[in-house]
Image 1 (cartoon, rainbow, N blue to C red):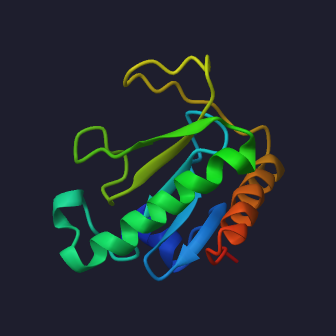
Image 2 (image 1 turned 120 degrees about the horizontal axis):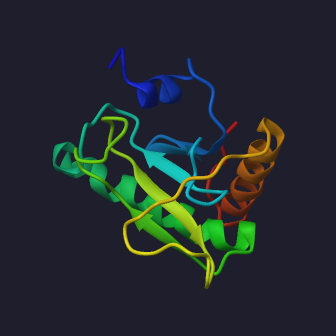
Length: 145
């Protein structure tokens, strides 16, 4: 879709800090992360919400989400992840995306209130994207370029 930010990221016309790039979808850092290392995983085709994702794309997309959620803790020293998806309401970009947020005990995240932070620099974001990408590579997942 021409005016979709995530479609532009998938197409490579808008830059992003990619952590994984596969036929099933791509994962990249959220520019307004709940916690640093917060990854968005999106399917390649423009799909506005979960109910519109074709059934044949479900296994690959959710496998990718699972792999990113597996890689984030060891890559960043987190204890776990919070995986979430909004459908229409609270969806700032109308393209299906799963949030994979690194978590640690006592990190302050409560319920569905998502305070946002910022990266200190593009270098910091690129470094975290690289750490997660390397961990995905050690899991046998093709890394983003």
